[in-house]
Amino acid sequence: MSNADLLKRSLAAVWHPCTQMKQHAHDLPLVPVVRGEGLWLYDADGRRYLDAISSWWVNLFGHCNPRINAALADQLGKLEHVILAGFTHEPVVQLSERLSALTDHGTGERLGHCFYASDGASATEIALKMSFHFWQNSGRPQKREFVALAGGYHGETVGALAVTDVAIFRDAYAPLIRAAHVVPSPDARLAEAGETAADVARRAAAALEAFLAANHERIAALIVEPLVQGAAGMAMHDPEYLRRARALCDRYAVHLICDEIAVGCGRTGTFFAHEQAGIQPDFLCLSKGISGGYLPLSVVLTTDAVYAAFYDDATVRGFLHSHSYTGNALACRAALATLDIFAADDVLARNQARGDRLETLLAPLAAHEKVRHFRRRGMILAFDVDADSGFGRRFYREALARELLLRPMGNTVYVMPPYILGDDDAAFVAAGAAAALEAALK
Image (cartoon, rainbow, N blue to C red; front, top):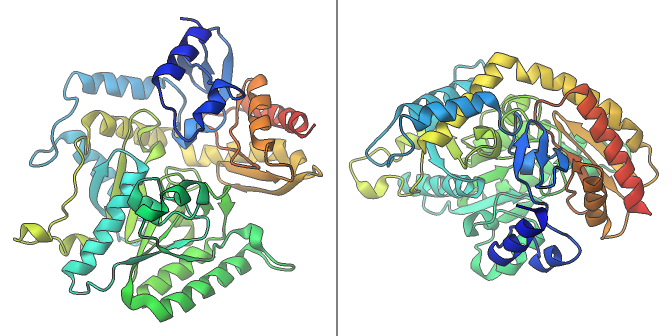
């Protein structure tokens, strides 16, 4: 099969996500991929691309990872899937136990009671519905509204869009949405003269406090992307915001939902981003990297108190939510293999060195006259570019021409590579990003 044949057939048969399809037919051709190996993706003509964004932030340990492949091959010979309503299986039990153990940050307190789905937006829906239903079961039915951060993104199903504050995703469907309340973001880029990132966090927390003081009787939950708001352009904030938000939620009897769909599984330097604030949320949403980028999987973990509010003889007081592929055995086995790699390879410590190396190599870009707000949190590096609205598309094409997959969000360029990036690979990424930047600015 040739690239041309695959492209023609795809345009005729597939509706691709997050894209104006007319662009693919003209100035933004699809990239055909026939195989992957490690950091690299290959097209039908043998051209390769270093996947520096982990295929939309999901691939943690490279394409066709031998250890995850072996685990899936073993599982295929045992059980591919079974209904999780009224049945259970070893991979889903093991995964739930291990994820719960990872939430014990030395205090003895854990999240657990894992509820599974297949994607991040579904995890958001589950957490929102659980919070809403908790308050119904607890005799406080007036607590049915939600609070989200400015610029926050939590998925594109109707419930998730209600707590998403990114206009391009939300506005077209506004008549379908029961919109949440929006409070200021602690985005460190909003610092005024003389302010630190912690100052911005405290200022945003003060606005949250004022809002909750006036409205807490009708608020069910606050939802946040801890430390990094992805779709807002990798907007990074100080952990102080999470500490203050947790205290405020406690004071005003409001749930805290940590959406770690993009920032969990080691992306920010700790396995869970909220660890860096020394807090525990009421709901924790995970997806993307949890299966190593292999199979669709998402999970919501919650507290014993939330679980107890649903534990009753009456069916209507149970959590009435389901997905056909909930707790899929293959996806859970891929996630277990992913956790095995974390445990065996000391991934978090090695990622610190990888991130340091990449930051050093990319540092010259911070001094570029068109670059603003060069920043890093763990294995996420980003910078904004002072350019016209067409910059992002030009940069994407120029990066591809240099065998590099980097896909800016607007004028924000970010690097979010798999956790197998070597020193030579990091140099390749840095050189390609610098060259693509210069070419896109011409």
